[in-house]
Image (cartoon, rainbow, N blue to C red; front, side, top):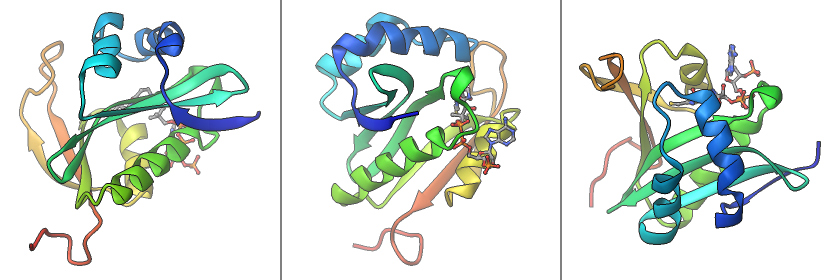
Amino acid sequence: MNLTIDYMKVSQLDEVFEIEKSCFVTPWSEESLRKELSENAVAVYLTALDGEKVIGYAGMWHVVNEGHITNIAVHEDYRRRGIGTAIMNRLMSEAKEREMIGITLEVRISNLNAQRMYTKLGFRPEGFRKSYYDDTREDAVIMWKYFTPDGHYYG
Ligand SMILES: CC(C)(COP(=O)(O)OP(=O)(O)OC[C@H]1O[C@@H](n2cnc3c(N)ncnc32)[C@H](O)[C@@H]1OP(=O)(O)O)[C@@H](O)C(=O)NCCC(=O)NCCS
């Protein structure tokens, strides 16, 4: 595998959408993903490539001084090879360069694999959102990784 990670391009959206559909009960539409790239000034989207092939992606919104992860997925054939971790690490570097105080995300309470990855990356559960997901009414775990020394914003 020749792994590279870079900003997502509009020309990669078809491949991204295929992965999105295969991963999520309620996938984002291709149009929403397109709007994220073309119209959302606070969005940062990355793709992981094996050569030219898109094998994973993730997105984050830069909201004031926080990073909010919107989605992350790795192609089924490429999982458990550190690609999710590599994309997240790149998003965290991007967040630190932009002087964010930390990154937050929501994850389904049943999605233990993703939670394991986030925990390994230093994210910690900070709360729950009851019935957050419209499709199954499942709760979300809110996780945070702070970059400030004491875990809080103070100035
Ligand atoms: C979650 C996801 C992005 C992880 O991507 P990945 O490239 O396979 O993750 P990594 O290889 O970097 O795994 C990092 C760690 O996460 C944990 N992990 C990931 N997948 C796991 C699995 N299937 N079983 C157990 N632990 C798992 C492990 O601790 C792993 O470290 P290890 O392999 O050294 O034990 C991928 O499984 C995926 O696309 N899932 C479907 C979409 C999704 O759920 N997205 C998250 C929405 S919040």
